[in-house]
Length: 231
Length: 219
Image (cartoon, rainbow over all chains, first blue to last red; front, side):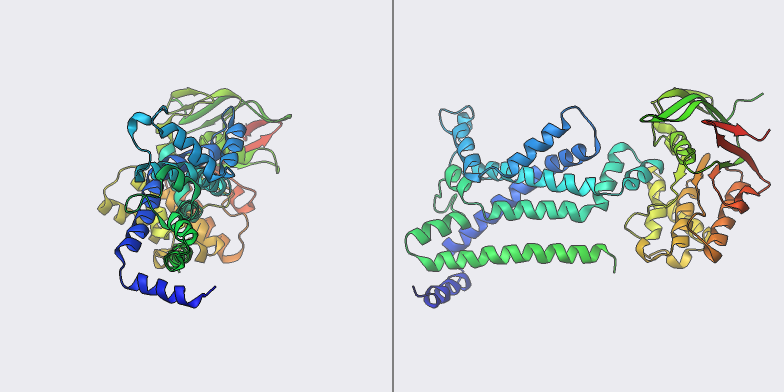
């Protein structure tokens, strides 16, 4: 198989501002970002509560969330598909094969990642953070926010990992999005489709974008961690 | 006779099978300084943490300004007046100035007034040159002084200091000792848990001693 021909064609597509290609990139990034924006607040809150509050069934919740972490995304896609299909309980919303359905799927996929990473970050936090805040007059909510701020790199790692998981996800996006050109086709589903058709150039171009996103996420995290040290 | 600033009645506290306090009582008078002594593991830190509302007791009642509260309840408004400083204080990962400002901001003080109070507190602690420095660049003594300034700036009615000079020696210990003495003289009601002979010798401090699961006074 010729590797260099399709690769140079791929760069040509990226640099020429190919509308179809950039539409796919936009769909992918937009769905991932919106999903993260919507699911981060409740997931981070739950992660904090599991870490700090001793309630009946806490262990069961942790096991459930950890189990969700290892769920195949295609199974999550299947469940959401059944919920959103015309005969499903949420069929009246008419969301199947729309970007909103992909966002919903991404939210479910990112949720356990965010909860588990936040839980781990808060459990590892120095207990004096919360106590110091409380002793200085902070309310419970404010002391919780102060704790999250002190472990902000762990929380940011949670968000970035959640983003990394959904932006490269293919099974759920195909099932609930339908891979419709110009509407729900995103980077991973487009790579799968184009490769199956033998059209490697677009797949390679999109692959480079995904790799750039992955590297960008890690560079951003490292940069923020550096700034956080107030060096 | 006026009621004490803070009173603890019939307090029990145990950790598992180990009984730390049994039917313990404590009274703190307004404006007085106290040094709390006792062997390691006698519960000095736990007692201060119960007074500060950071540790629940198993039984008993507390009263602050003659307002009672049955344990394990601890009124939120007390936290505005009772401040506890850890043996090894935690400074938030921001500048020393922001650390000292934290409690003032929680009290809704206007920024201009906060800035003036923080400036005074930095000067009091001898940390004016360190206002923008992050905590990890401070020495142990400087961190302790920053924590004392962060507590003092709130002008607390009751200040609880847990072994403020522990882990310090030489000049650092002397500087912290001076600040602790200044706080005790400065009309605050202060309780200092300490093993430090110099703190125990301070004539202005009343003695509280933990023994046999109770607090004993020297009178």
